[in-house]
Image (cartoon, rainbow, N blue to C red; front, top):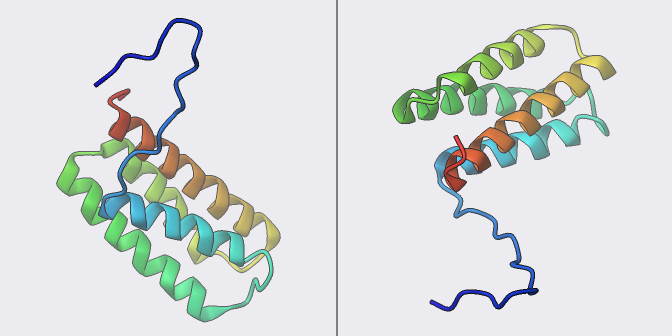
Length: 108
């Protein structure tokens, strides 16, 4: 493998997506969809199922800090649909994706 020459910028690469990454990314996309259709019960149920799967995958990989965020997201899911709830869901899934990316890159 060649090292980049001095002065050349190395392009950042996206880590390979495992099951936990898939769940976090698709959860983030589902939360973004709720901005358009906030009362969509099918998407809400899908997000709830993804949170259960994320919790299981986090336990399997020993990612305790991600479980705390999942707890917050489950609490938000129990609340009445509102723009604030959707924002909390989006922010939470963004944090999960960033933690997952950091773990895959070896930063955490």
